[in-house]
Length: 277
Length: 336
Image (tube, rainbow over all chains, first blue to last red; front, side, top):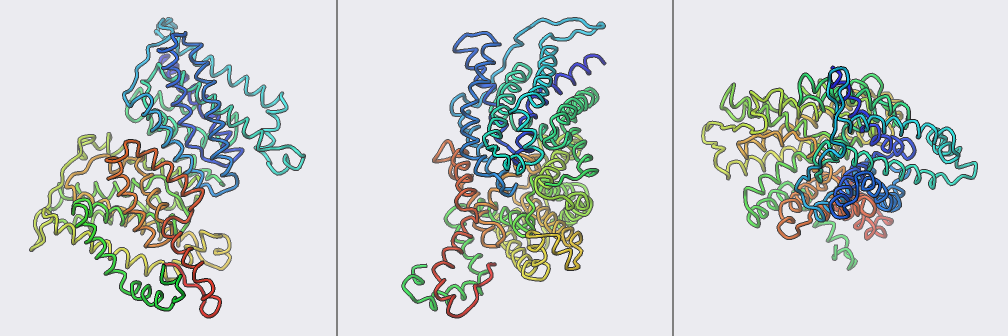
């Protein structure tokens, strides 16, 4: 019971960290961004290289990974995403999928296709109410909550955050105030990409690092974004943890059904409340 | 093309008109030629894939709805076909009919939910259902479908038709493709096709004209799912083996790529795209190790530079060349 709850919260936390970028991209630019999975995978791979080649600690390696995706995400935003503003959703899907395809192939080129396992960086576990829980998972939950608080503050207290939130509501009105909206959307995009890389870093020790790790996670994150409401920052938070719980509870009874249940929930939500895109 | 440049569009038009009139034979001849150039086996696969692209294009090219989970309908046909062979009857034609009916039934059940949506929602809800179907085939129904290992499907001889011979399968696949082309062309050149393109442009206006757009979309959706299921069944007829890869949602992008490469919304475009994509994915890995990267670059180029695909580009070029002639006399021809 407790372990199911803890697992659900862990998965929910990671889903939240990854999904927030997707939600922002969709809310601000109306783009279904498949390239998000690339940044996530890249984060995990840079982490692996930093750990193995540079011999630094996990925290520093994670930081390097998060910073390393900034130029990549800038390039993606500049060369692909920006040219898709205001275009049909179909082309955005295809173009960002093409970016994902190129990136995953490049990763296979550089690092090879063989999955790389990572050991738990903390390695200890605590006993809560008679259940043994790895400390690393508790740290993930704490980090995700910390990020939620930080993003709440960023979006309600800082000027940049406020402009992005306003842009989510009404892009034209913000633009008419003389603010270069695209610049701020690029900031939001880079922020989302960094968080996705962080998600990859945090999830890497739980799963094995492989070039296709992004695909499956991305599909689940789409479900999170759809359930939470496109471009809704708090909705994404709630949906991520709700779907994380759905996954862990389903997985407890029937392991292989865990991922599928998420899509069942998403299907139900879409039936009840179709999106207007 | 070169004829038109030399200032004799009439001869060029005559040739094109002649080819168009008998294009069914031209297509058949081209596929026969292809089977000589590459293996018969591969050509069969190409033709069946073209049927799938055509079915997909009815929704994407004509109705303007991008589905991101069309493998579900292909896989439904594939499994219905194989299961009929194992459980009900060894007659391949009966199994094909059951597979098409299964696709139609699935379209009828899911349609009311799916066709109401547009844009990203349409793409994602198809993906969600595809994931569900993949799970059912791979895990939940694995005692019947064989799960990850798959299941084999053998059919008995009916009269003189023996599908264990590749030549028979080739002829049957070619005839099926030509039939599907004929049916879809009749469909899209009718009022129904006009309504579909109207829905693509502006659904509210079509409603305003008094048409029940929901019914139109449902019919198009069911036709697309049935034809996809038909293509799935043909794949199994060719391979005599079905695995979960036939319903894998990650493979749904193949048909989108094919549709985009050729150019959406035309029969020729779908054929060019289907054959083109299969050629790239089958042969390019032999020459370029990083073929996925190449495919990605091609797709980016298509999206940013040649949005109408190969066939659309050819059509546009031709229209530009013929522009002076068109000014004089006739209105521009409707692309097929």
